[in-house]
Length: 355
Image 1 (tube, one colour):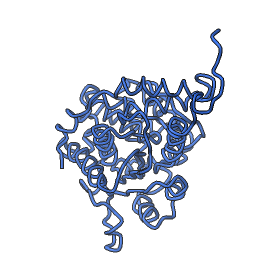
Image 2 (cartoon, rainbow, N blue to C red):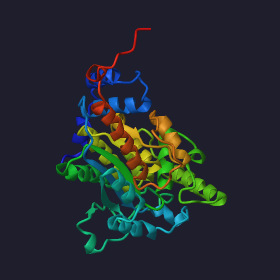
Image 3 (cartoon, rainbow, N blue to C red):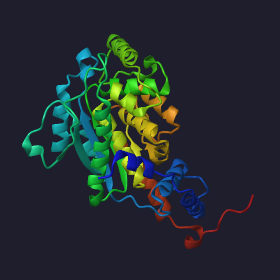
Image 4 (cartoon, rainbow, N blue to C red):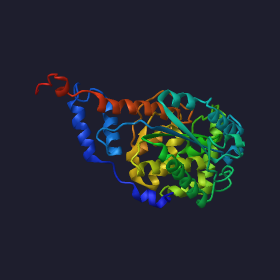
């Protein structure tokens, strides 16, 4: 397996020459130039990411990483932390939203334990990737969520998860997660890196009322005051207010970019992981496609900071990779337009007259 530093150093910018070649073909297809809007933009970007003028996205993979968060001790969630392990079991049995949507688009779901506070029964051993860094993070209002070494290990474990799946084939990925308390960690990451007040990054998560939301904001402010994470050091931010699944997702994004694989981001937590990944290697942003804009208000802050426009806006806030599955569906449609439509010459259709 490749180490984190090697992966980071191997990431290059996307192929501008191939993008121009794809644009030339798009302009020659039997339609007015630009008439398929964002689909044409996606097709061109995916060509540049993959380095292929005629990309095909046959092998679709959604990575759903799970971990628990010590900050749940502060009553920042409407659900108990036991739900994390229970939902991972549901993923492995095929009963969750991500299983349904992944099946709909023909994607396989890879589920990994990065830091769930419980162990899993042996019957799940063939379906679950066991990459546990620790049994949940520590309560970050009392000190760092994890050590810097654990932060590095979470990113490295994400890289390893991606690379272990390469032999099975990967043409495009989606990022997903499960972890009660992870919107609080993501809000803290977003507030720190974007230098935004937590009142602008913290949302209702699993369905908090007004009073509980204010408490959540107070907890995040206290965590930032206690830990003073350095916005310019992504690993420092991850270690002090992050989560193991967030680090793992950042690792997956870095590994995918190093292999020229498009990364379709899910919602808010994937966005926080993207901030960590971009902090480690700015070029990785060129490989990212935002599937949607979450109801969680901090997600909009992240997307605006990264300068990435979401493809969809469906008021989603489930996580798991559900939005990413829909984004992959649109991305595949875009590449099929590029590769499957006839050109004016092929169809013997008269081209547009010069204005």
